[in-house]
Image (cartoon, helix red, strand yellow):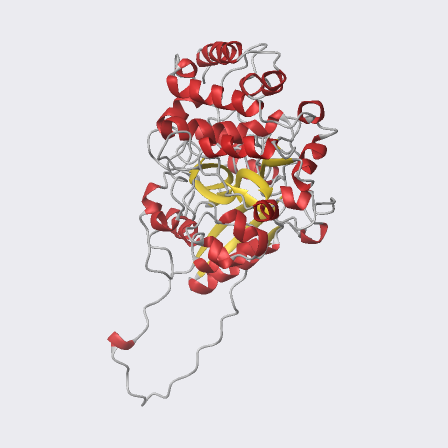
Length: 483
């Protein structure tokens, strides 16, 4: 199921994913796999500068150089970088650090990489010895990032966004894909100040057989009216419009639809349990849309929407028995060895706009980088973060399929990755974020209530009104328990 190459999102998230996990905390989301040959023999490595050469002697009668022609001395400094080693491996970090050192003479990077990074760096941090830069997302069991955020122990990164990317002539802000900086996943306090730098990402959307569209002469829908029309046409040929692996995949689908219906402010209000928000007009649009989609869903979907049989639902689009299936960029790899219809070709699109004239939306899992407020070398740490968005760094990361949220990144990709990561370049709005964390409330699980109920809606066992009321009730209880 979902690959753990991406994360759940915010500090203020009880949302589903774990770092590099990026795909939700429900049981139907798969574990990350890290290639064995990428595991560093020693997880803590130090990049060493070239050995200093002895200065050549200069004859006494040599004409003294004009002081203005002499090179300014380079200040030697050490930057401590700690990075989580996930499914992308450790090698890319060693390579990007070497490139950073080469472009910043005098800087030596002490690089710490580990699959259990919290266990490595936490003891030293408790003793007051902090890394200067940390790549470690929210949503992990140890919750180190969340803990430091709650303690207001992170350095604001808003000024980094206005820095020029090292070696280039554009600012960091201008290089990052629109939407990534307007979310609680980067601004955890909801005050417009960025504390998490967005890193490797994976968009979610609707997968389909592009070969089927070519065969039938169908147009890929961009609105829900076009979706319903296509569903009616396909039904005449015995093909369902929609299927889904499990209800857990309605997290990304619903988040994108909510944002499309009411915009980012409305989405954030939903995620923070605003009183009455789930009874609003925009929320009602989403509940009713999903319910209508249920009437276009392939008949065996509900029976197979579980951890044991979810691939049978994914197989439906490979066999041309259903057209669309919500998923993330890991799906083609997951189904790589599955049989498929002649002429099958992967297609990928954003969730169509809910409102006329709106843009399609794609929910995105991504990882995060941050700077501790107690970091010793904060200026160089900011320089390192800015360098993460350079074309040079992005190219190194991409070799390990770790894709940075940089505008136009799809131009440098090939094959299916080019298709998947061009979704934002083609006009889709990126949606990120998740439910605010709360103290535990017995018997209340917002994602189960919101997404897990979809099977009952599709089967007709529950009405939209019952579903909507249950979500609002859960939201009321969690609002009172917000941390």
